[in-house]
Amino acid sequence: MSNNHIFIEKLRSSGLRPTKQRIKICKLLFDRKDTFHFTINDLSDSLRKITLDKISLATIYNTINAFKEKGYLKEISINSNKTYFDTNVSNHHHFFDENKKELIDLNDNDVGKIKIKKSLPGKKIKSIELLVKIANSN
Amino acid sequence: MSNNHIFIEKLRSSGLRPTKQRIKICKLLFDRKDTFHFTINDLSDSLRKITLDKISLATIYNTINAFKEKGYLKEISINSNKTYFDTNVSNHHHFFDENKKELIDLNDNDVGKIKIKKSLPGKKIKSIELLVKIANSN
DNA sequence: TTTAAATTTATAACGATTCTAAAGTAGAGT
DNA sequence: ACTCTACTTTAGAATCGTTATAAATTTAAA
Image (cartoon, rainbow over all chains, first blue to last red; front, side, top):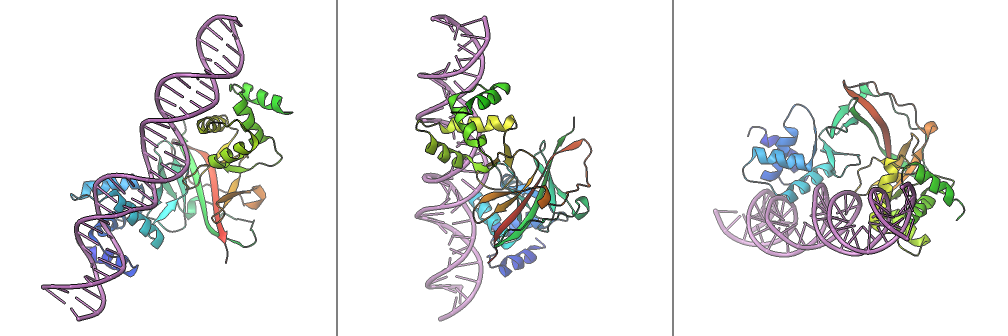
């Protein structure tokens, strides 16, 4: 109950009405020490565990898309049937564990500086995304 | 008609029967000077243009998946509803033009060496994929 | 040629996501 | 507190890319 006002403010300040569904999702996503990765399905399961009155799947999609637009979430580029999101919106890269189907952050110290030497006229770089796929070594 | 025997051999040598559908797809994908990127939909359209007797969508999917397994095609990691394939199976990276929704190769000279300094016990790196998203600069 | 296994095919099924349109809610102005 | 309007939620339908199914066809080895 305690941190609700922070999320209410966050929502209001970005033009989103602080509904109880959005506040619950905020708390689940942002009221924690470490950032994490999730799919809509993960989130849906987690919400079902922490609240009795269920939040419609459509609302979950709506909310996550709104949060992505506002820059509170990042979508990770990966060729999967599901979309992966990251609550860490700073520039960083990822391992993708092909066995566990899970993302793991790579921070700045984990990856040497990436230099893009090519440029195209009339185009500018929007993002640089590195995905390092890993799997069990045996 | 000329290069069919090459593709027939290629298919046979990898345990795939050289059917006329597969040969047609081979010619479309591999009988050209430059490699390229495509989606199943692109491929389906192209096939419809070069041949009168249509190839079933199921066959196109089957064939592309078989070619991917055999290492003749690479699937590109990108968060899109469609899957992108590349006939260039060597290690390289990509620009993704968000306006045209198209991939552009980055060769070795276009990108500085990528160093991954982190490793996880029991896991080994399967691939390193860099995607640089670009868009119109105005 | 015969035959078994591989392949193609149309269509159904599937799963993630988006759309729809009706019911409910928030918040500004009375 | 009440009204009004725009925003939000919701269940369920629709969509779209992809995969599964099962019957018909084709390949290639004997």
